[in-house]
Image (cartoon, rainbow, N blue to C red; front, top):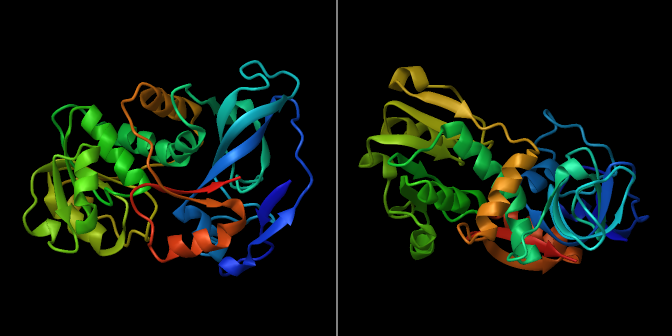
Length: 309
């Protein structure tokens, strides 16, 4: 099979388009012929070596945290899948990733794709959807909550806008001015263009803030929360200090794991037409290095950048 692989941390050029042996489905595993994989910020930060204090990768490494396609083989003991099923997969950090034409995973790390969803769209929902569901579950969003979503046009931010809207929250989102109409179309009640105005100067009384940026955005987000409110953050820039006690709010990190039930829930909502997959752009697998460069430059918005096989 063709795959992307790197043997050292460094710039995007350390990634190479190579031939590797086809994987085999072991006991309890399925073998999936992949059609697409997401390119995430985690991928390039891991490749660049920014996360070495947290993860020691086996080298050489095939990147990618998800993928999706058609089941072509099943191992002994598999009960949920059969050959011909379409499935999305969650790829572990220390196992082969999704930047490849095939992948073997335990069936507990795979979910069937609803008939109504195209494969590329379903994969765009996989890693981003996990983060979204777990973040919303952590925040305990309920109908009537006032919610601020940062990076509302991004892969995770856009799904947060959609899911919180579906749950009946009043959603404010930040994004670039060029993405205002797009984010309103996802279900935001109000959009604040961060390149034109400072949300922290006038926004108040929020029940929940979803903080995906870190740095100055994180620091400014405390004061828009009401007393007793909650800020839920996903790994971005390091959080310098927890100022929750100072502002009378709770700061919680959403711990993202390969949670099959979370992914099944997101696929179910999308299959029913209640969530819309967000595909910003597709590129062939062979152009993975260029895809990483685009991600590093912040050139991708309105969903997930996808590699296709």
